[in-house]
Length: 372
Image (cartoon, rainbow, N blue to C red; front, top):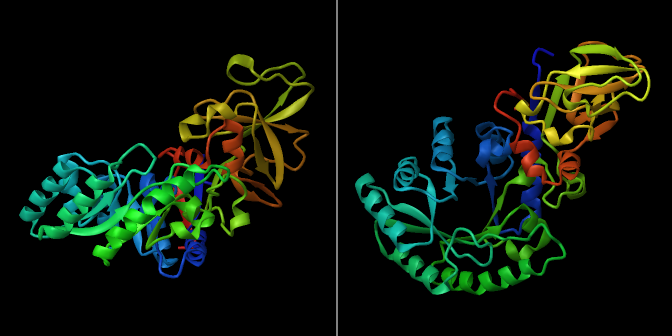
């Protein structure tokens, strides 16, 4: 291993995950792969290409800059920018031919003005807030008015009508059903008047939860990367984790009973043991909150992480260290031998979600792509 820390991304797994999502979707529904936040930590452009190969028709990002990066990387698929945009950011999004989301008339007018200068209609997706409480108008009348403005102005194109679910990943929540019940009749009105408008609402969790939420398109993010939208085992939904996080055993040192390792002396050896040092830490996105509460896999066997995680190193109790040598690969996320550590496992230990685990892997960790 030539890197102190390395994230391996299996692009073939991304492609297979998208193919599986296509199988889950209703026949008329298209797949939009969400590649925002550097592809949830996996790499946006490479994963976008794999997603398109797996059956995605659309791509989605959060910012105009992310859309521009996809274009610079040679990706010409339809791209939807889902986030709020300043006037300058809106100009960038339209310049690179991205669709944008609208929920206020002022924004629609600005898009029309910029489109007039650019010479191409601005493609708008009107967003109805059915209960997420963030972006979008919660006024159905305002949403329908914007639909008609976008459809009637030659400088604009009504490309989509959308909402976003707040609790699709909570099976016991009835709020998902309330949001769907609110959105569906309004979407039907829009579709009746504008058959070519793409209606979309479902995220990854909603795809598996309710076919009625599939509409014309589903915006899938976390499942594209083989992470479970319901925070369980992704294999239950036919998904394959695409990312493995690795380091290596840089040093092995004897530690006597009672001796401590790391900042704050948060761990002391219960007996004589060997401790392995891995050159990876919270500066690489391996969270400090996992101190004394995680395992790593070396030579196909789990070993407990001990001591406080520092910025650049973690320490592992190797016991007798039988069979372990300096340079051996250590897997912090992924499969090695018969053992597996899922991002979902780390998320549970940190009381967070799998999204944050992969998004948090820092830029100083190189990404290496397999299966391209």
